Length: 622
Image 1 (tube, rainbow, N blue to C red):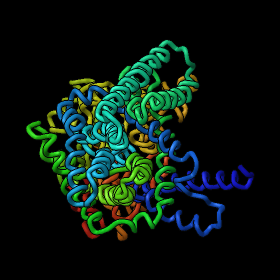
Image 2: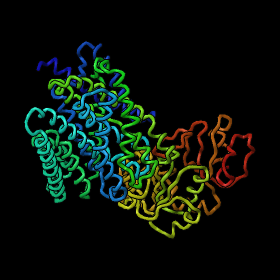
Image 3: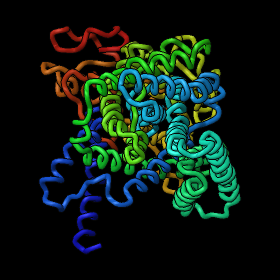
Image 4: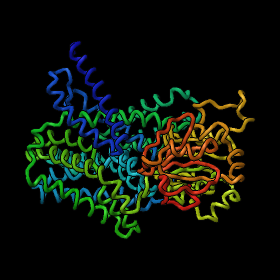
C-alpha cells in the first residue's frame, strides 16, 4: 500500500468518524432519531467524495470493509445482549417468546411469499430475501427507543425482538442460501441441518460457556479494573471469529449469547463495561451507517421496478403487521403493543451487509433475479428508518405507550419542602415522581394522591417498576448528603450530568475533610445555603412555591423588581415541558413564554395587566 493511499484511508476515517459524531449531536439537538441524520449525512458525503478527487474514498467494497461490518455488528449485538436482563423476560416473557420463537419463521414465510407473488422473484431468491428481512436490529432500535421514551414493557418487547432476532435472521439467511447452493449435491437438507447444529453448538460453547468463564475470571479479580473493558472487547471479537470459523455466520449468535450470560451474572463494575461498549458502539454504528449510505450506488437503486416498489410497501403494510398478529394470537398482549410492533420494524446494518454478501454470490450461482436483492433491501432500510424514526414517538403517544409530556422531575427524599414542590409542579401540569424508603415520610404524598415510589431507588425492584422515561431532571433532597451524591452519580447517565441536582450539605458536612468534590456529586441546587433545614424553616414561616409565565411585557427584570431580595429562583419550565433547575454551577437561560418556578413569601396577587399568568391555581402561582 502506497503512502498516499494510506493518507487517503486515514483522512477518510477521520471524516467519517467526525461526521458521524456531528450527526449524532445534531439529532440530539433537534430531537429526532440519530439514524435519520446519519443516513442523510452519508447520502451527502457520497457525492462530496466523488467531487473531492480521490482524497476522500468512501466505498463499502474496500478490502476488509465487510469484515469491519461484521466486527462492528458483533460488538453492538454483544452490548445489546448485556442489556437483556432476565427480570424483564420474567415480566413480559410470554410475549417475548412469541416474538423470538414464532415471529421469525412466520415473518420469513410471509416475506418470501410476498417476494415471489408481488415482487416476481424466483422461490430461492424470495426465500433468501424473506430471511434477510426477518431482522430489525439493535443498531436502529436502540436509537429509536432512546428517542421515543416508551414505557418499560413496550421498550422491552422491541429491544428483545431486535437483539435476539438479528443473529437468528442472519443465520437463517445463511442456511437458506447454503441450501440452494448445495441443491445440486446430494442431501442438501442434511447439510443444512448439520450446519444448524454446528451453529448452535458454536454459540453455546464460545458464547454461553465463554461468557460464563469470563464472568468467573472477572469476579475473582484476575483481571485489573483498568484492563477489564479492553480485554472484554478483545474476547468478544475472539469468540465471534472462533464461532465463525466453526460455522459460517454463527459468530453473531455467539456474542449475543455471551452478552446475555455476562449481563445476568451481576458482576461488579458491569456499568463501566456497558458504558465502554456503548461509547464504542455509537462510533461504530455512526461510521458504518455513513459508509454504507455514502457508497450506495445509484445504479443499484435504478434496478428497482414497479414490482420492487410494491414489494417494499408490502413488507411495511402487510408482512410485518400480519406476522406480529399471527405470532401473538391468543397471547394476551395489549392491542396497543401489537399495533406498535406491527408498525415499528426498521432494518439496519445487518440486513444491508447480508444483502451485499449474498446478492453477488447468488447471481454468480445462476440466480439472475438476485440482482434485485440489493435495491429491495436498501429500499426497505431507507424507508423504514425514515418513516419509523419520524413516527415512533407520536405513534407511541397516541397509543398511550409513552409519556404524554416530555419533561418532568424525579425527587428523591420526601420532606415537607420536596412534597410542597411536587404538589405545586403537579398542579401546574408538570410530571413529578417522589421516591423515599420511609412509608411515614410519604404519608402526605399518599394522601394527596401523588405519584410516588416506596423503596430504594437503586434497587433491582426499582429498575423494574420505576419508569423514568418521561422525566428529564433529578433532584435529590434526602437528609443524607452522601446518599444524594450516590444517587446523582448512579443516574447521571440516565438524565445527563447537567440535569442531576442535590440539595447543598449542612454546614457540618461542608468542612474540608468531609466535602465532596464536584465530580463526586450532582450539581448543587439553587444556592449554597438552601439545605433541607433552611428550606423547611422557610416553608413553616409561610413561604410558598409559585410559578409565573415570563412575557415580553413582564419579564425577569419586572419579576425581580416585584419580589425584591427575599426569594429563591428554583428553575423554569420550557414551552416543550422540559424542566430546568437553577444552580450556581449550571447556567440557566430564561426566555419568553417559559414558566419560572420560585420560592417566596406570600404576597398580594398583582393585577392581570402586569403580565403574570392567570392560568394556574391561586396556590400555585403568584
